[in-house]
Image 1 (spheres, each protein chain N blue to C red):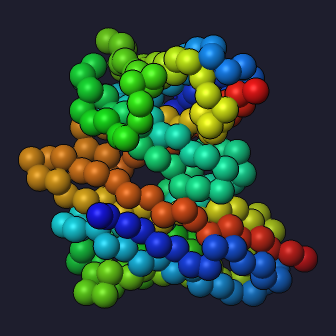
Image 2: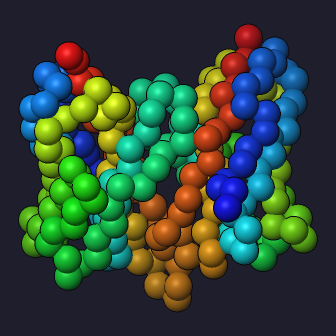
Length: 115
Length: 113
């Protein structure tokens, strides 16, 4: 069964500090992995998307890494800001063949940045 | 350009009632997917429609149904509402049938009393 596990479940950090969120998956065959930021009660917004051959992808203060061998990904947030407080969701796409893709969502990591 | 839009933003219903949620995809996008997100959980896939045809269905009861219109907008219908249907319902659109590059709407918050 395809699964996406995220850790930690929640995290509190001081403004200005860095943090790293983890995502482990068992989805196969793998197509791509995406990190979303979701503010409370809002729709997810894409941060990064990585395919099998990509190890690192940056988007401003967000840097995602992917190790396709160990099926692990991380999202590193640098110099956190209060506006970074949100849930971060890891989503892995499975290549079901014939142009069909299935998505498996993690439960997310709830990040709180405090002053 | 407008992103994915959903209506209504919030909705309160009672058990046994039915509800219709609406979604307008990004202009030019032909595929719409629906997700249910219970508080504290990741989104769960309900349906995907592409070119007005059902492309995929998640593990949801027959009380859930959807359709896509010629202008690619979509409706999600839920009959005989249960308390457990209370959730944020997300719509996502993508350019073609593939879902790897989906863009999400703001969601509709449904509360069933």
